[in-house]
Length: 215
Image 1 (tube, rainbow, N blue to C red):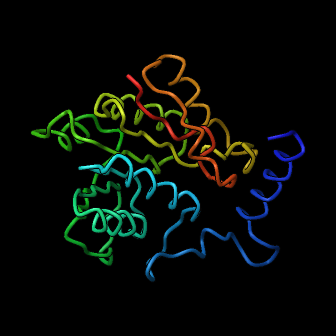
Image 2 (image 1 turned 60 degrees about the vertical axis):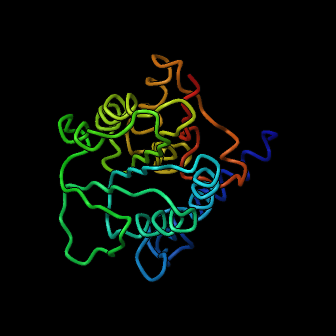
């Protein structure tokens, strides 16, 4: 993109993220099949494209909230006829959507024992998607990356959400967050690379956050 095009995309991102004045954030008013789903729909479309390409046997998401994205991912896997979703959150919610492909886990995604337990007994060669969307502070995302990266094999994806915060281009006062954690991670892990093709829709909450294991 040209600098002018980047400026236009960033301006739209800020308007979309915060919502028109007086209406509140758009993604706080977004749902999937009636279940709140705090995502950018264009990112969800990218997720289904990735899933259709790599046909994951396991999708792990951190940060369940109301379960809308877990339900979306499970229904994508339904269409593919394979795979399961494991959704992790520190809070227990009684009204989460139920689906035979979803397993909810209560706990912290920075708990090494919990993370290792998710993959225990599973083939390391299976195709996987890991989507990080819990605590967005740099320290927490850094811990998640270090714990989940070893469980993501070549050709699979480790996606870091909300790299747009801390002025990239939204919430400039957030402080170091996912984007900064990703930069530090990539500097030490050449086996991962940003898959910029997943940002082809221009609007994404995860700029630079679609990480593919290439070796």
